[in-house]
Image (cartoon, rainbow, N blue to C red; front, side):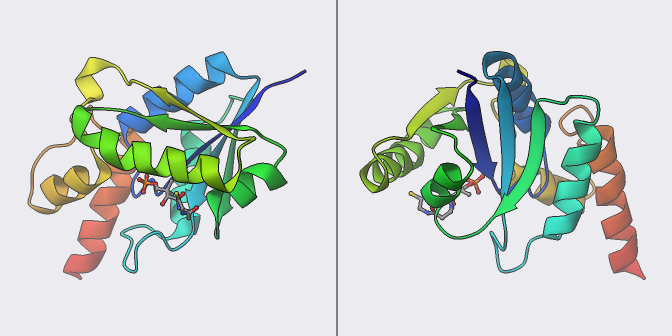
Length: 163
Ligand code: PNS
């Protein structure tokens, strides 16, 4: 039986912490679907399509990594895709409470779906999409924390805003 996992999130933008978790998941499961929540925030920096395009470009050449979008309840999407595992990354204790709540709520909604937590490499434990956006918009360096393509797209966004 092949194993299929879903790694859901906003990915606004994709960070090297996400890339690390996706790569670990791709080694652990036969296939992993990176599922982007549509309209995660009212004002996301990147549109859903931009986030999908970035993720597809970064994971080009990795056939067992699929990029998709979803809206509505995560468990409904996971069931629809025929998966029974949700992957989430855990960086610090501070992530635990929110993740614990979501995992238990999702289990209540669908007891056939299991949430699995994975730790990213230590050098990514403090990175979040929110911090990347804040630091970059204030002129700070984010190289090494996000894929080069994300850095380039962040630059494009800032330049477009300056026009
Ligand atoms: O990367 P994020 O933004 O922390 O991801 C959060 C996400 C997308 C996993 C969560 O908000 C979610 O699953 N949203 C879909 C709606 C849903 O199912 N909500 C109930 C979760 S218990």
